[in-house]
Image (cartoon, rainbow over the protein chains, first blue to last red):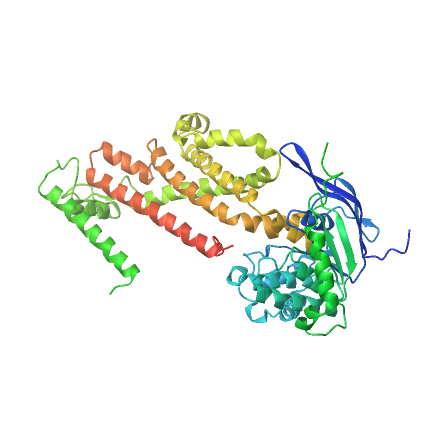
Length: 269
Length: 269
């Protein structure tokens, strides 16, 4: 085995199918994927292609029908503290204030009250929510809730952040602002991020590496490095989006997503 | 222009006055025989008499205490106490039972029995309870307990089953143990439903206790109402009925405001 980093994510020969009304419906065909520490991998694909399934397998919410998911050398058997998850729906707890939500991770590990408050303040400030720390989640807008959720995950300091279409339900302006914030956070923290999206532009703009998944059963049909969100790039977003390389990659991703592969080996006999 | 709250208050006050006036007219002109219906004034006198020491009969020196040697409020308190113990037991047993039934196969196993018990009118088995536990308070409290715990258990089960998977996944990804997931997410997420179940149980227990006090129910507001009816003290019966109805409404309002204070997020998240 080659030099495996402690927090490398390895998806090896994973197939997954769901049982729907007594029939096995394949969701993921055969996924082999290694995510290096510090990468921001975006995974794009048409809805229903199984990209969320892949994320949930990495998160440990379920076990693959076949194959294995490993973090470092340890097989994933369930959710773990080193893999933070940002859900599509902000799953903040309405019985806790925004601040108490953000400090939940440290609280579960028995950190002192003062330490927790300091952590919460730091991350609430990072996502620009300091002045609503005492509010309840349902008093915030959708974009603010999503930021609070991101703060909660970051405050827990996971090595790997799994994000499942976190900006999918937001309006265009909020979405763009959060994308830029995410890039800044990634540059500042160097976290490994797996970011799922159905937006071609979002995938190309954010990723340091872009993956495209085919329609169900999902397979990875495009895997290319992208440079636009890479550390050191401090070109304004509008200019990045106008770069010829950017336009080219976006076109290739768009074509890859729309490609309807003949369901050769995919259909169950 | 009055605001909506004031308009509603005026409407209710008017209808109440109208009702009292009608009641007074019907009894004043003896449109109904006094044995069947007494006037508001006489009912008020009976209410006052039942709450004070008064001569055993007009002109006598011998004083008696309230009715049946207890003041009316003591009768009410006795009934409320039985409810508190019965429903309290229902909470202590029903909530943990509901949690277990909602999360394990025990739910499938025990649900038919619970449904059977819930669909029985409690008075159907009071005879059996009297045989088992005697005619005293024990059988009544058992009755109330058996009436109260099924709705609480059912509500807890539906609460537990309604907890979103991703809320639990979220807390597990933050590093919670199974036990921490139960206390920090499952319990608070179930609380709104549990409180609704308790409200249903209290209402159910209240109607049950009043009926159950027909047999050996002194002190007890239901027992007093029944006894007064047997002795043709119509005014006292009416006073008891008013107290029973108003107490039930007050109980429900109290529980409703408790709900509001404990689960302010209800319906918002």
